Amino acid sequence: MKTTIFISRKIPEAAIGILKEAGFAVEINPEDRVLSKEELLAGCRGKDGLLCLLTDTIDREFIGQMGQLKGIAAMAVGYNNIDVAAAAEKGIPVSNTPGVLTDATADLAWALLMATGRRLPEAERYLRAGEFKSWGPMLFLGGDLRGRTLGIVGAGRIGTAVGARSRGFGMKIIYTDPEKNRILEEELGGRRVELNTLLKEADFITLHVILNEETRRLIGRPEFKLMKKTAYLINTCRGPVVDEEALVEALQSGIIAGAGLDVFEKEPHIHPALLTLPNAVLLPHIGSATIETRTRMAVMAAENLVAMMKGERPSNLVS
Ligand code: GLV
Image 1 (tube, rainbow, N blue to C red):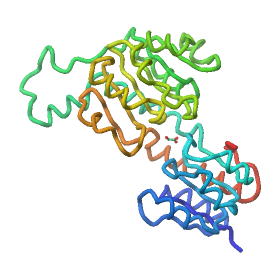
Image 2: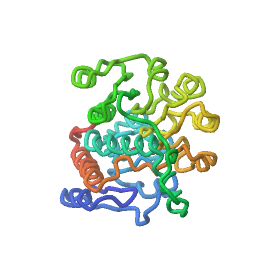
Image 3: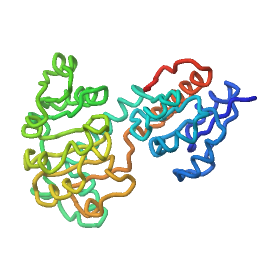
Image 4: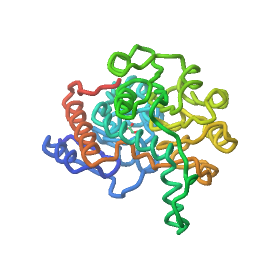
């Protein structure tokens, strides 16, 4: 009997090739959309392995019905969509794809930081609307970077890579993390501070924490009140880390200057007010979206799945 795999959505071919070469029978969601709970259950029924995405909810209820799975490989670094504890209780290993998306995500955090700080989408919309009649001394003034303070909340792989990129822009770094970060401190002159200090001192606050019960709504009303009126908030980690209602209020009432968001609290639903705010730059969760990175992520997920199907420990086991 062939090992059977379900892939919840079309992913780069290289990964599918790896699974087929391993001799597995591979079934892929034929439609390029997120499957409903029922469709995902139907696809996984009787399968040995699942390669899933961050848009799939793999909760206790799902796992309760999928006890036959020998492994779940997430094509993502964040795995808050998977109940890893419930999977572990059933003896189902779970893997993720860390490391390979660090640079792409750090690059996007910077793209968003600059687009927000220099008001690029707003300026581009103005030009496309035919409103650019002359250069203007007061046209689309944004915020400087040199000499300003970059506040990194969560100095893991991506937070550190974001910090490293600030070198060319001459920014000071402060960061929060449970542990001292040698690269940020010794190579980049960064300083580890408490969250409240970071919120008060930083000009650009960039979020890079894992979403869990401790970080859910880490940034809410009291936190916005501590920020500078000129501060920009950048979120490329997970939407629920920010209380979106409080963010909308902060942007509407000038409590902060702007926000650059690649992730949202109830993704893909976007708070309607955000869509109307010129000082919010909004992206459809494309942090790791480069051809090379998505290929590396898919290949890594496939390799993890091959190991799990053989009863071996995958390189990127999270459970
Ligand atoms: C993307 O958000 C990921 O977690 O890989």
